[in-house]
Amino acid sequence: MKKLMLLSALFVLMLSCKSTAPATNTKVDNKSQVGMKGNWVVSSVTYPGSEYIKVTSFGLADSQCFEGSTWKFVSNNDSGEMAIVKANCPSFSSPIKWFVNKEGKFVLKVLNAGEKAKKVRDGYVLDVANQSPDSFQLVDHIDVGGKLTNVVYQFQKVNQ
Image 1 (cartoon, rainbow, N blue to C red):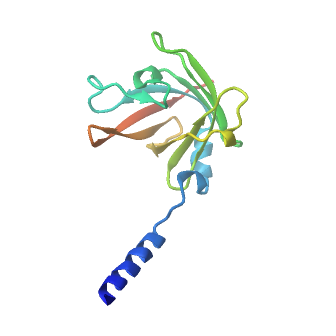
Image 2: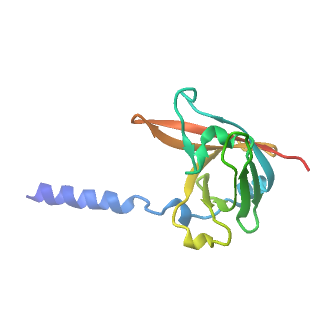
Image 3: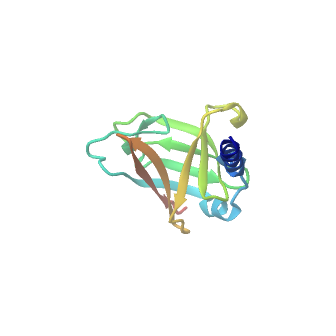
């Protein structure tokens, strides 16, 4: 009986030590955010099996429709906008709210016109990778047949 109680106490202790803070409640990585400030275009969207598997990105359109999409990031107020502009894809434009947390996670909310971000319950959390002044990647992890697959969105800076 003592062993059972000890194991139960150990299990509770392990659970209480695990961080339960969601990605949206962490501190902001200002350096990464300032590095993303400006206008960007998605130059490619890649993932294993893309010739066979269709992935819907951000609940909006086929991932390949995001190639050529335009994104504007304003770092001082975590706002911006994005637009799908590829031929044979649904036309879409929307304001966004976003930030990068200290764990390197990009948190995104796609808003309807006039909608407040705090009213939007759904969002997306992606990893930031290979950030430089002229490019960066956002990496989404999706389940394909029980296996995690990375969808990589390659962003290129638009010079103005």
